[in-house]
Length: 601
Ligand code: ADP
Ligand code: MG
Image: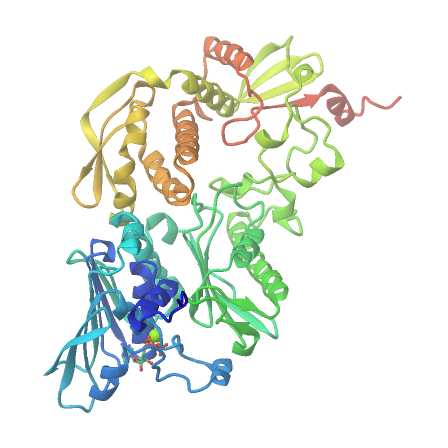
């Protein structure tokens, strides 16, 4: 008896569809590409329930003839290439003739289309790839495709769909990518019959980013200085040192206008930001890469999301240089504004990014006063050669705690600049950052006592406005806040209300904890549940400790300072704050003596 048999056509097609269409956003990508390939200048995308219920795309492109419409959903039908050699010079997004066939085989699809000169259009209705109904209709020039009930005949795949929130997030990211890479098209995105983004044509990437991003990003975005090498050139926009997010979701690459994912490119970009942003923080960037089509392979992935460069290393190093160059130019521009012309020109290091620690640029204004070079971190045990290489890691992860470096017999001199505590110690002058130290103390306290943290209800709930996308991300995780004494409720479609906070955060603006948590959820939602919970909890606690801690600029009483020092001494990881900044430094006596030239003998 035969055990091998040929799969029926419709079953084979359903399986093949899985390669291209895993989720609503994949099918949307294919449809948007088709609309662009058809030279549409207006594209309206509407989805219901994160695309799980319905997706519709209306374009004003060139449309299809009756004959073409009747075959466009058959596998390997394409108007874009004739032979595989055409791939070398392909200018369209599509070429495999697979997308419509795949989508139609796993959904109920309506296609309405008309060519410019045709008097009538055609409306087709298909179920599982089978044409069920066909009518001649009068309609606008262009194509409308409506996908109902994606995966209705592939229950396994349907079960793999994520929550509406997650699917919707994928769709908005995809939509942003299209908006950012096609400036002359008017894009609109609707969710559940509400317009979420309306993006008329605009001049450039910067203008485009204003249409799709939120306030903190658009106030800190600058044009990428154009950067050309003979084989590749870059343009676009990137955020400055004043903007940082907790995920990579703001980074977009386009190669010859095609949105691609390539983690090596991301790393090259981040290298350009080295020492500009603290570890674990990411910029936003929209990078357009123009390169000879013959030197890239876009056909390595069925979804055409990944790309291979013939000369990957060159592209990477040029990208890093483009980023550094733009940030450096921007900084020196800023610096010129800050410098009083009468005063002598400041000494700008050749490469300011190499000279300063990872935190200096996170501050509000840029300051090039020479770093306190002779301070020795009290917690830094002499680094071995291999440790020196890792100097950009957070201090907390790299520094072994050494008992004898703790200032045991100190006496408090006082507070300096309302920011540092100065201690006299037998080995020198010990300087403690009051905020970092208090942050560390609280962070460790929280770890022990969060179960019964006292909560105060707010007389007037604090209302926070978020994007609808962020709200949908956050809602399933409200419990996280509850566990930390923050009571949150959804309030309208784009607001949440904070109704109670832990006592120690009373009167503190906690919106950024909420906003940061959104970023963390997005970043971590793919890892396993237990790990997710642990990591998010750590980060929320670190932020709460930061909020509740005394700040730089707070005058501290003698009593408070003594208390802080004694608490710090009892704290296990007392040498760095939860974000990795050191809590204190020792300016050694011998360094002081050298400065005063008392060390000659
Ligand atoms: P591909 O894009 O790889 O050619 P598709 O399955 O996506 O394959 O589409 C098949 C064909 O249907 C396209 O080559 C094109 O001729 C036609 N088509 C699809 N969508 C549209 C549209 N929105 N406007 C005009 N023609 C379209
Ligand atoms: Mg296509």
